[in-house]
Length: 305
Image 1: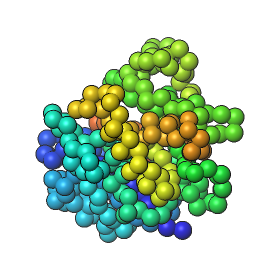
Image 2: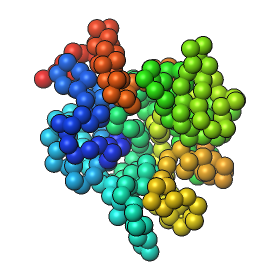
Image 3: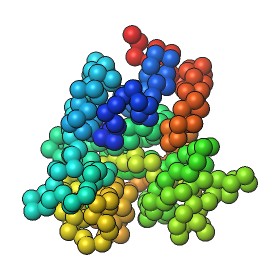
Image 4: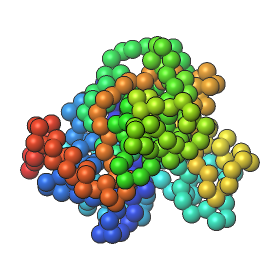
């Protein structure tokens, strides 16, 4: 069965020499975080990668990673643009940024016709999640629902930064392992005792061992079709500042679950997340990759050049 890895990379800036975090060199041969994600996905069984980028960074993006990766796996590109809107809608005055992760993945509609996994460009997820989601997509498990989906469920304490707060999708999971709710939650950190602090109403019940979404979702092509329908509904809503509001995957999935249209299997992973949320994180992530290489998790020469 063909399977695709979708990487949301449209947030990468165009000045690559200016310290863009997604393109910071992390490995001994200049590998960036995306190199390791693609390597893990290929090892798990994925056949193709689709990069979601902006048109204005296409040339530079291909020079930095795209042309190298195409030697390892099939590669395609789709483009997220602010003005890519359904008929009857226009960009609100003052809006400068695209519409969020939901619109980003919607750009893959028509290009991705096989089961897929979505990830962020600047997050390291570890090997376990790719294997579990690939097996979920190809293992024949039947979920009786309009939109059968899977999600990598990371342990909250494994996804924190020592240098500041993070945003995570805090999950509630039922006794059968299915997602019941997901709350996009900002300002998450641990105090000196390990107690979790955050902004918002979930403060009183979340703990360090709760599962969180890191925007690593598995789904079928029909979900991409739904994103088109949902995007028009989102744009029609009067709530929120039209210059800032975002069409976000966790919110979209949560609405489908609440409406009885989706079931999401939460596949728990115990790997530690790495990412460069703050500039101070870079050195720690480089050290983490060096440690994984020393332990034999990755070869020092990742692509065997």
